[in-house]
Image (tube, rainbow, N blue to C red; front, side):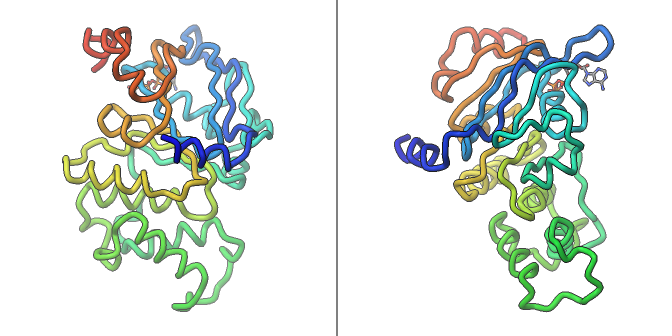
Length: 260
Ligand SMILES: Nc1ncnc2c1ncn2[C@@H]1O[C@H](COP(=O)(O)OP(=O)(O)OP(=O)(O)O)[C@@H](O)[C@H]1O
């Protein structure tokens, strides 16, 4: 725990992500109500809650897929509330989706290379990549970081489901991310694949913070330092994983039928 505290304090005091009073209405339905969250640089946080709690809407407001109805969102101190999604990506914000967005007919390496090239300055270059190209080197590093070196030449369509999810993490790491939103990365994974996911997430570079939405509490609580519990669009509880796990109200909500 001391190591975590040292890592976080070394990364500065300006919040990586700060939501203040964020509300998002869909007609008369409040998907988010007055949500205030502060995530420090390098901090890893889980957002948990039952179906319809507002977790995906929260991600959509942070990425710019939806604008909040009211409230503000700051990213490393800058007010990004009204920024389009690409401006947020340019500033180092990334997201993975529940539904994958991979090129199934291309190899693992080509998928990662295209992602690296998409966020680099040379993306319009017509030159063929060379083996010593910096983008190729970045590609190989990312493939290694998500444990896919052994299958890097295989087509994505031939990969196991878990390997495809690992590849999605590599794509989110392309460029220079400072903060990643992981949307249920453990969904559909076998126990072995879940263990691998935990290893990959806990080995990410220390300056990269993230929020993870995850229904699997065992995975979520092992890869974060802090937890925000949501219920009916509001923040219901915040704390360290061990506090959340042993909280009677959280247990009631999860075990008492409030969760799927
Ligand atoms: N585009 C939309 N239009 C109308 N209502 C929406 C829209 N998106 C979400 N909602 C509603 O907002 C509420 C919060 O939904 P949201 O998807 O954010 O919850 P969630 O916590 O991500 O749930 P799940 O775990 O099922 O993904 C729900 O009542 C949902 O029906």
